[in-house]
Image (cartoon, rainbow, N blue to C red; front, side, top):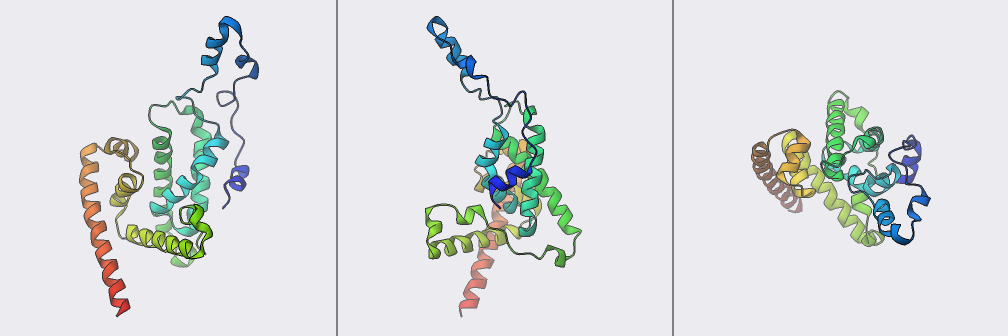
Length: 224
C-alpha cells in the first residue's frame, strides 16, 4: 500500500487552524524583524498538516497495527481507519502529550476494534495474501535479496511470538520494548495505572521469553 495513494483517498485537511500562516506575515523588516521571525517560527504545540503527518508516520502506524495483532489481510483497512480518525481529530490536538503518544492511542483503539471484529469472522474470511511490510522492506539492505529475505523472516518470527501473548501483555510489550515508550506514557495510552503497566510488562517479558524458547525448540526439532 503506497502512502501517497492512500492519502489521496482520504478527505482533504481541514482549513483554519491547520492552514499555513500567510506569506506576508513573514516579510517583516527593520525593528520588527525579530518579532516577525518569532511569529513565523513553528509552534511545537500546533499539530502538523495532515499530509505531512501521514507521510511521516505511515510506516509507524502500519507496523504498530501489525505488532498489536491486526491480521495481514486487515492491516490496510486498519491503517485507513487510523488516519480517518487522525484527520477528524487533528485540530483537537493540544500538545499535552507527544504527537507519537497521541497517535499511538488511536492506533491502539483501532487495533482492539479490528481484533474483536476478527474473532467474529470465520477463518476462511481472514485468508488473504500478506501485505508488504514497510518494516521488512525499508532501508538500503532491502535491495539485497538475501538480506531482504532474512529480515522478512525475522519480522515473521516476531509476529508469531507476539501472537502467543494475550492482548494486554502484547500491548505493553510492544509499547515498552519495540516503541521504547515510558511506563507513564503507556499508562496514558492504555488507560491503566503505572503499577499495572509494570506488572503486565514483567508478565509479558516472561511469556515472551517462554515463547522464544518454544520457537527454538521447534526449530531444533525440525533440523534433526
